[in-house]
Length: 457
Image (cartoon, rainbow, N blue to C red; front, side, top):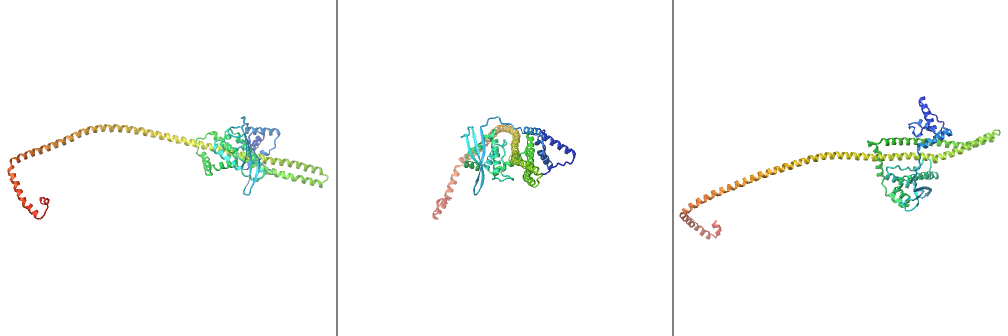
């Protein structure tokens, strides 16, 4: 095994680290509350805590403290929806190879047509369900799904399929126990729809562009917040610290698992070596044989321990790393909702200010309108009076002028008539002479065939 030792720059830091380690071992400090720091010292401290031997009383105290910190409480409500994921099957085709899982549902809810349903679902169907739950239940924490690929195992192997089946079963259990999410319509479709019906629903989903846009909005919303509640700030910081701690635990546990697995393999080969040695040493046969049997007995617990760690502890640790990411995502969505609320409040304030400004402008224009109405009415009355006066003077003057004109003309004609009456005979003789002078001209026109009208002219 690899020997790990903690080197400290000064005695104070070393003493503080030993005190923290002892407190963790005794169960007085929650390991998840230790601050995360970069570098290998932190990982070595965690390794020391994991590997540290403890008495039975200390182990019980540590277990009790850890369980108390997790605050696991059973839901007292009566369940009416039971979901089981089991019976994985491998389907091999020329084009594709995949694994399906049976999803068995028992329920007493009136929204379901049947009390029991049994359908087969692929991993991508579970991904679709979680995506829909995340979109429709934005303010609720949706449990995470196991990762699609594994770096240590083949995704089509039975061991990997069994581990994934357990994780999917736990996912559906948590969904069914949620008081709000368990009534989601997409969950009902997932549990009851046939394969081709579910495919139709999946194709009708939102595109990747809209999902990316939504992710960008929720990511940048925290930067635009102005009045985030301290409660949610503390919550966000805690989830970040918890995720970092669980990532360190997962990374270190994998290293320890590899060391323990190598140790078990060495023990399996170490026992036969002692037995072969015992065959050549008659005096040490019993001793060497006992050592070989002891090593064989130690190899089996190591193998069981590594198998249990790989099948139970590591998936659980990885699940809570993903759970921390799910909580972070939900908190970001909450921040986005608060950001929209703050923007709406700012818009409302701006509209109120605009309304106040417009109200002042309306009042000012209303006063101007009333003044304009009063002024125009007063001026119109004054104009009407002046108009009547001026029109009267204008037409009266015109009438007087015309009367004076016609009066003067009448006097002139009366004078002329008197003169004409007194001088009538001379004027008659003058008219006859003018008639006689015009007769030769008329005879000449007849001779030249000129019209009478031209001659008259």
